[in-house]
Image (cartoon, rainbow, N blue to C red; front, side):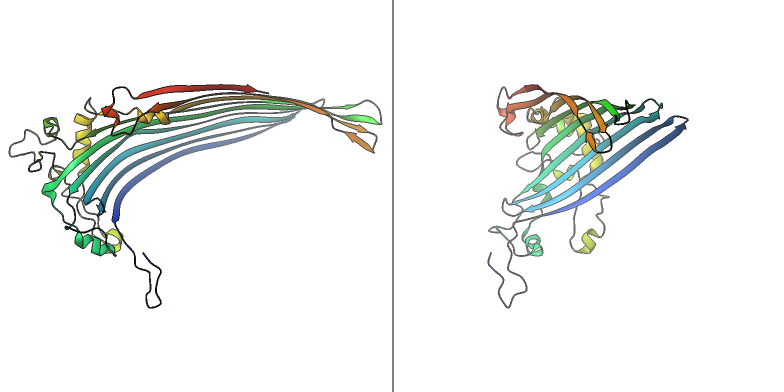
Length: 363
């Protein structure tokens, strides 16, 4: 690379990789809310309720031209996400002549779930012309590529699930008591308290399996296996599962990027989901200890209280003495471990991942 010259519109660029992504994302949102404000002879009561549900179904197809690694790659991903949010509050502002009372109670919770997140990676070795290392335009990089589906194989399958919960409870009150002893000594006594209980929990599971090997179980778990005329295709020489078994003939990326680039073929989502349900979801995957490192639990409790007084000495002086107390309890559990990587952990006998717990309380 170098700086742009006077006779150039742009400085020259070097491209060693391009990604094109086609995404179908369907979102459905449901919501409910209710507000109540009830007036009493001595005050009012307020409450609010909110419920929301978001469902997302996403399917991605991605093409990657990696001239530096001399690969062409195809990716497929399907996942579902669910997010539930619920909030309830009730409070009151009451005046009993001799004293005033305000209180509020609330509860909120969010649940995030990923029932499944399935991924398939496909590779073609020797994806570029001999000697190609970089290109100066995207089209030039495409022109340097070689598409050879017979030498394109299923490389890696992985799946993950995740559940995350966050819950928050809050209660608080405030009492005001006016007093008047003499014409020059009057004021208001105030006291109250607040309690908060917060809880968080996250649990993720991840499984994976290298598929660039000779495994007849993959052949048997094709939806057309056993049908007359069906022949499961493997790569010549290696015997690895071929992409030709998993091409979606009906896939059409349409006018991709307004026709600027041609996306090309797409992997068959239904067939790959069938592979996950019948083969990869079984004991053939490696359960990753690395995913546990991201799990955590948190429990926090905070209690506080105060008492204060507004003391008026005639119309000239006012005193505001007060005392406040707060206690915080915090318990956290995380994970620590020694796992080289998600692809290497199958090579070690005991990838150690253990809980690390800490508890703290202070005033």
